[in-house]
Amino acid sequence: MGFSKGVFLIVYLLLVFFKPSLSNLSLSSKELSEVPINFLKSAKKSEVFDWMVGIRRKLHENPELGYEEFETSKLIRKELDKMGISYKYPVAVTGVVGSIGSGKPPFVAIRADMDALPLQEKVEWEHKSKNPGKMHACGHDAHVAMLLGAARILQENRELLKGTVLLVFQPAEEGGGGAKKMIDAGALENVEAIFGLHAASHLPLAEVASRSGPLLAGSGFFEAVISGKGGHAAIPQHSIDPILAASNVIVSLQHLVSREADPLDSQVVTVAKFQGGGAFNVIPDSVTIGGTFRAFLKESLIQLKQRIEEVIMGQAAVQRCNATVNFFSKEKPLFPPTINDKDLHKLFQKVAGDVFGTDGVKDMQPLMGSEDFAFFQEVIPGYFFFLGMKDDTMKQIPSPHSPYFQINEDALPYGAAMHASLVVRYLLESQTETPLGTGDFHDEL
Image (cartoon, rainbow, N blue to C red; front, side, top):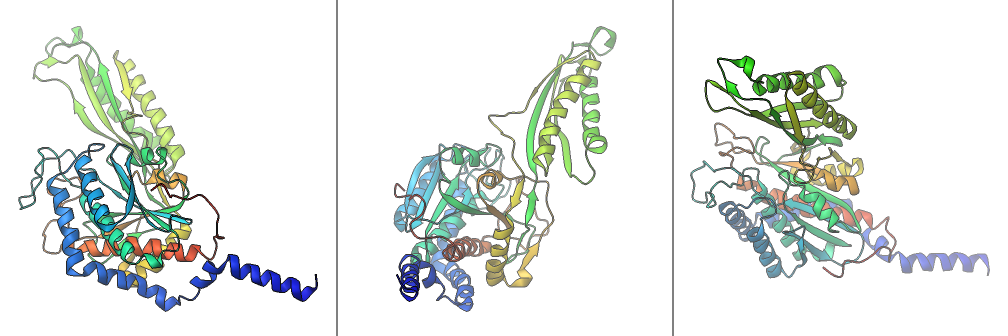
């Protein structure tokens, strides 16, 4: 074969087998930057905005705890059916995974958590929680509404999808490790990247904040029962005082951070639960304490867990007490740190800059809060960010997990547009790197 014929054959094969990749290059940078702007305009249309608000309020009135989100899941599936979006259910008990696009690689996911908190709502308004002792006090109702809003935008613009978008509606984020169960159920099979967001009532409307690398700490929970010997408070020599033992335990636990941890390695140990005794003049038989521990390095988290158990057992023994320690490994698995992928951070900055302008994209400092989105990031590259929802009409802004927590619904279009824009841009940019016909399909969705 002559040289010129060989070159012609190579060029011909490139045009045939990589045609989708080359065709994407016809979108100019200006056209790419207009996609998020157009998506935001779509999300702000009254019919779309009012629809998202209606969904959010229905969910707020009927909050459900982790792995109990059956009515929430039913509402999501109903809306997906209306949009003609296929899905898989149940995934991890109540989870739903929808699919939009070609059903072929590359696959990218966007996620919303669905569960509420065991709180009695104290906000008096028309759509107050109807389920006693349960409340959407962390914005998960808004998260679901925004992901459904993104689904609607993507379905209406599916010609832009050069691959497949998975819509991950996840149960049990609030300590139940729902993300881990979603992974175990195969929700991320063949997925290359995943995006997630969280409502931020302290951040101004039309702003987002995040960072590359460590964003949120890893965390765990513990509970200890310290047992002694009860008796009359007037004759303590005949008793073994578990309250004294528990007090020494709490003080000693604080030394784990101040004396054992590297000052440059942020860690927290907080005892937030102390239950023991019911009378002024009776030493109880036992005391129960509990709390949380957090760190940005997984190794530090594991070390803290080990030392917490050693300190509790040792200090209880010094005071002649016995102790048992429970870390709730099954019910509340150890959350890894939330670490944002550096390449996805660059993508986020470009897309967010198109939606909010450069002034609306903030670089934030790491927080000691935790998020089970981190389980996804242990498996594939992931990116998590905060969406501004501050309501300037409120004098005091209640923090998440407060019975007075409220959402500024004007932020819903921004979240929907960001979700949709991130995955469209990801798929478009991936096409220049992904050969045609590789990977497995998600035809079963």
